[in-house]
Image (tube, rainbow, N blue to C red; front, top):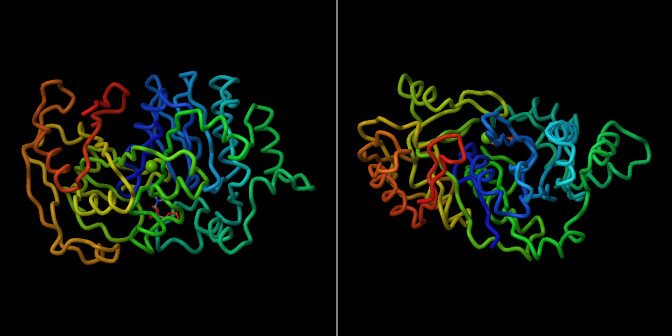
Length: 376
Ligand code: IMP
Ligand code: MG
């Protein structure tokens, strides 16, 4: 069975951690959208890794291979760095990485342009907007074009070096046979609220972070049967734009410090707030999400009661409705230690999430280790 793991909020929900844990049971871990704006944080044997482009596969397990799909925009300098990290871990590992030559590239001028023109969105400055703009306006450059370039640019050399390390540049048509007989895990980047079509426009990224992104990458033959949406048991956001349950002052400071909420890619302090169930419900519906994974329960350990936003003054029916939403809260009993096997005090919280999103919670995560992810 193929599955997808998507962000059900504004990114940074802990997708990398979940995908890494699940990856050993899949043959292919596929990134299908975005670029190095993503920061997927993974802990392996206690060591922290941040993957910006590389799918979050557990390279200690022999099984999974990694595929970077055509829906991505790839900064070859950054990819070269991540492949080198992989190579330094084990020289065999890069041969498990495949890149679709139909993906577009992020050029140095895209990053410069991003800094100049996308500050009001809170861009990560990784050149994402300008690279997708070039693609849509039919002026983009694909990985394939860089490979075939007559004059040897820095990026052409990077591709040659990655090939020497073992990376394969192969398109979906060439891999389809093998993939049809495999189990695929599609790893989303960003989150539904940052999706170009369904997120809170214009405060969005430029790719498809709903399940539609899987299909526009060409995977019609590999339908994900379960689509997991990952959300924290509170909410965070980097960048500008509406955030209905945002906290301010001391309360925000305390939650940010408890959760160590600083961007994995940019180091920016994240905006923080309580869980937002109308937004989560919207994300499930727009994202094609069928199951939920809730993360960071350990961060709220010891709270007497936990606030939850259960409604707005009117239910959101379009992304426009988030701009002036007035959140309404309840509180539910808190938990001492979500990790403890007999801690059933998380039940009221989870029931509320399930009740208001019509999605089953399949896993909860209470820490950075793989064993902190518990089937629910
Ligand atoms: P861009 O994708 O760099 O253009 O950024 C557009 C908006 O999406 C900004 O608000 C960023 O902070 C946000 N964003 C982009 N990628 C991520 C991510 O992986 N996690 C969280 N926020 C992101
Ligand atoms: Mg992140």
